[in-house]
Length: 368
Image 1: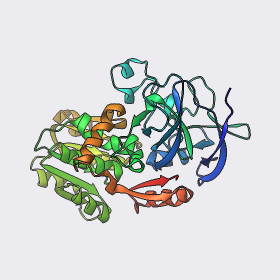
Image 2 (image 1 turned 90 degrees about the vertical axis):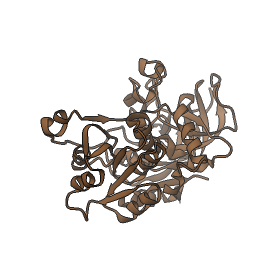
Image 3 (image 1 turned 90 degrees about the horizontal axis):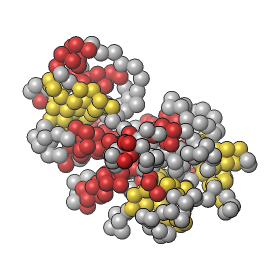
Image 4 (image 1 turned 60 degrees about the vertical axis):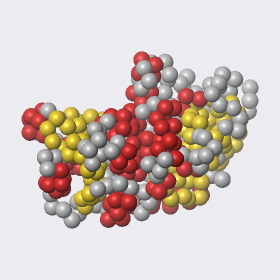
């Protein structure tokens, strides 16, 4: 049996701790897994939710789930990849349930257990420190110099795509883009309102432009984000700090309400605004994890035959959808790299701070 290897990783030991870069032991890849040298990893709001335990997952843990890197070793059963391949990582799935078999791995029956359970499918730990088990996240834990990744969770990165930009495609960016392209599927000329102009919302906004929507409205309270939204294709923006009634403003812009909306904020008030700003028969997609929200079912939902739906990971199959996003990037239709600011791995706590304050849209840590 191969020996564990020592790797540097950003460790969270207790709820609310800052990240601490320490050595941990990493078990070798199994037959369907690969050892990958991590080149870069995005910082996602999900990482923060786990750090503060707003999203319960085991601690201590090595977080990070928007990784990318170079395959150094492939298990005996890995068919799609070989040593030296460039890959981006995405979420884990079982590959055998009805949802996975039907091409919807984001709805995998074991999604929560595999991505947030902190252990391998057989209950063993991939990471440890001085004999103490360390939890994994999304089956990768890519806030580290090396990660072990299941073949199902990896997507090949073509040579003409810069590797270090690709990590965020595995979660936040495919979530925003997929909410529009895979779930809303708006008709050309449609009016779409996107609440929250962070990396997820701006990805949804760019996807709305790809879908040839006629009116694309970005909603946020930070002026710099709204300015960026305009540069990426928003036809209108609404600053909630400056507009007394955002719903009424959107209705003025669209005439009868938006044809669809996306809420990325995780704020119940924003979710209700996203629902109320749309016309009858429309769909509002929620992709920001939040708490309770009160609505009047008759007035806000059923009475106008509206739909309020949750979408996980953009309802995407990463092995199919991420290559589509590569194509849009090549053609200049999806310039997601404009969202990225790079940080050295050692500066992970500053990256976290800048992400939470809104200074940075998408922080990406460089490991090399």
